[in-house]
Image (tube, rainbow, N blue to C red; front, side, top):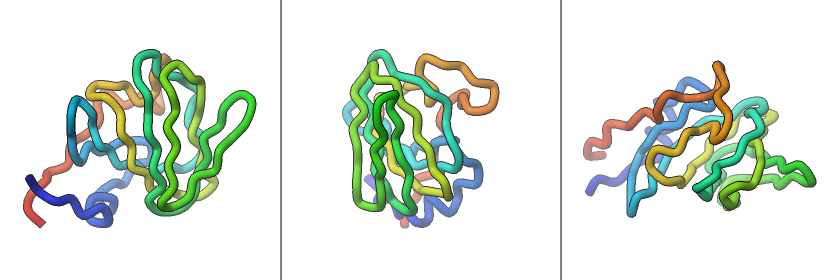
Length: 125
């Protein structure tokens, strides 16, 4: 049981769209990521996703609308719903999703699909 300093963990993230696992609970992973630009359209057939704004702003686009997210705001995207995150400027985001969920869902993209989310060394802080 170690606390996680979000600012310290975020400072170690250098690549956009590459999630860093900073915790786990009840079959869910807590991930941090930095967004910049537009991510591919995708959905997660069997998993809901929670996006929580930490720093900066971003939006989640759906085919019929978009939702802006700022620091301290979150949105749950239900399983099966096609979406894409977009950040005009860099944004830091905390995500909750089941262990093993591919970041690009039903899409395999040579640029954006992460083989596996990297894990933070959660030493005492």
